[in-house]
Structure formats: structure tokens, C-alpha cells
Image (cartoon, rainbow, N blue to C red; front, side, top):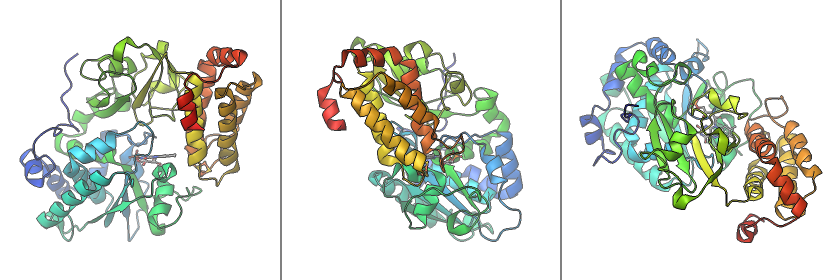
Length: 435
Ligand SMILES: Cc1cc2nc3c(=O)[nH]c(=O)nc-3n(C[C@H](O)[C@H](O)[C@H](O)COP(=O)(O)O)c2cc1C
Ligand code: SF4
């Protein structure tokens, strides 16, 4: 297969790439200028034709989302979702660190297409360094006349602010993010109304992920046909993938969505294979919330469609965590249940109680005091939560159930054996941390 030429990461490692001068010297802001010569509808149509699916987790087409905005509206707001709250995920962080102007240019294009007057970049609080990098780039863009009044000497004006979150997982959910931006507790909203109709400050609002927006300059510059020519038709365009765990080269890599989980782990230019001859037990390929694959399922394509065939919720954040055979699956299970029970915002009874019941059961199993019926109890609890069966306000509950269900179903014999033997989880140190 021909080597993939980086697109989103083309400036990674280039000296001075964070500065406006170097970004422009390498072709930056040409697409923003071109955008301002198009009509907003033309931009929307180009992005629709490119079938740019949201990179924030749900894979919803960006152009289609923009067309949900009411035709008649006075104020439109754009929120850039830079919360990146899904565990093992750091694609957005790399994009902001390596190429902040690419994100700003993408933000300008999306804001113009949606005729937004203000763009808010909602940044997770832990991103201290990235905050300074981004702010510097924003300041440079203002000084150059690329943000602010009548940008690029056009009639279009755009203000751009960074808003730092307080570090809650649920604030990555778009309506939790909107509530948090309004200065309230990050509680997801009941939908409808959807943000496109009544979002931030009850104004029509679009929320898009950092990576989604970073694709826009390339679509405008090189066209929708070029974009759809990369990867499978349903999963067009370049994509960033993270890999972590006991692999030789943990990191963030770019390719088309033709690649498989095996490629991501084993290719020399990606994960580079397992460290110290370790063997794979399982892989969480899309952050933790999409579910788990066994070592026999590594041919899954890292695209928007294939994960469903393996019982997963979706591609998620395309951040894979590799689990080796030395790792006790009970500790993996407990680590997850603990995360969701801590991060549930508590508004919906099923999610609040369900995540905490699942955590208590997983803790009992990890401590060597599990009962055989606990496995079915976990599955039953998982079935009775979630937005997809219409029981919860946001997708956190679905994300909490898929990893638990798939671990119990795919690693049942290992869990049963551990329960029969009634031995505590192998790594007592890890358990102490979790308790
Ligand atoms: C619990 C939860 C956490 C989420 N966290 C993030 C996040 O950190 N970043 C993100 O872009 N999307 C996150 N999402 C998805 C957003 O709700 C939304 O779909 C996304 O920001 C839309 O952008 P996109 O269409 O460009 O992907 C999260 C969703 C849920 C349910
Ligand atoms: S599903 Fe969970 S996280 Fe989402 S609103 Fe309900 S309680 Fe909060």
C-alpha cells in the first residue's frame, strides 16, 4: 500500500509551524480567503459533498448538521469542542499543539458557512500548554486581520474566544458543554430543542470537534472529490488514530480509515508491535466507551461502519488501548465502571444508579468476592440504561454500557474462572489505586 502523506499532521515537527508566518508560508489561510469569495451555502454544499463526518465520536455529517440551522436567524454561535475528555484520546491535543492555525482556519470556514458571529473554543482545563499555544495563535490571527472586524478585508466579522472548562467528562457532550459555557453546572440538556435551534444562550448553535474543523481548510483548498477519494466512501478523508498500552510506539498517527486495528498496533510507522514480546488479550479501539475487541478481532477496520459488526457502539474517538495477556480483565472492568460512576452527572436515575451498581459489582468481582450471577446482573443493569433505548438524557450512559457488556460477553470464561477461584485481582497495587 502506498505510504499515506500526512494532511492534518503535515506541519508536525516543522520548525515554527505554530507561527502565522510559517503556517502561511506553507499554504495556510489560502482556504479561508477562498471561502470568503464563496457564498455560505456554497461552502455548506462543498462540505456536504465531501461527506465530512464528525470526528468527535458520533460521526454525524458536518454539512448536514449546519443545514439544520433555522433559515431566519439573527445570531448564530459556533462552539469548538476541544474538551477531549474520552480516556486514551489525544488527537485534538496533538492538532492544537502542532498546528493551532489550522484549527483557527477551520473555525473561520465553519463560522462563515454558518454565518456565526462568535466562535468559542471550549478547552479542557488540563490543557494548560495548549491554552497558551492557541491563545498566541489567536492573537496573531487578530493582529493580521484574520479574526475580528471585517476579516481578510471582507464584510464578514468573527470574534473568537477560548473558554476553559473545569475538567468534567460530561462537558464534552455538546449540551453539557453549552451549559458549562453559560457558567452553569455541566448538565446535558433534554433534546429537543437541539442546539441548532436553541443552543448557547438559547441561540442557534453549532458544535464541532477540533479534528472535524481541522479538515475544512483541506476540503476547501482541494475540493470534495479529492476528500472523498481518501478511504471508504462512508468514511471519507484523513483521520487521526491514537494507540497506547504496551506497544513499542504509543502515539498519534494519521491515515485513511482503510486501516485495521492490527495495522495501528503492528505497522512500523504506527504502534510498531507489542513491547517485550507481550501478547494481546484485547483492544479498546475507540476510546473506552465503544467496547472491547478480542485478539481474534483485530481485522476490524477503523472506520465509521465496521465497528458495529463487532458488537461495538461505533468508531468513537479512534483511540486504541491495547491490553496484554498479563492484565487481569477484572481490573480493566473495574477501572471502567469506576470512571463512569464518577463521571455520571447524576440527572438520570438509570445512569446515576446503574453506573454505581455496576461499579459495586465490578469491585466485588475484582476483590475476589464475586458471585456467578453477578455477570448476568451486570448485563441486565447495562440493558436498562442508555439514551438509545430512550432512558437517559445523553450518550454517557450508552458509552458506560458498551465496554461493560462487551467485556462480560467476550471475556466471560475468564471472569467465570476468576469467580470460581475466588482469588483477588492479580495486581493488588492496581486494586489499591482503584478502591
Ligand atoms: C459523555 C460524552 C462526552 C463527549 N466528549 C466529547 C469530547 O470531549 N469532544 C468532542 O468533540 N465530542 C465529544 N462528545 C460528542 C459531542 O456531544 C458532539 O457530538 C461533538 O462534539 C460534535 O462534533 P462533531 O460533529 O464535529 O463530531 C461527547 C459525547 C458524550 C456523550
Ligand atoms: S445519561 Fe448520565 S451523564 Fe448523561 S445526563 Fe443522564 S445522568 Fe447525566
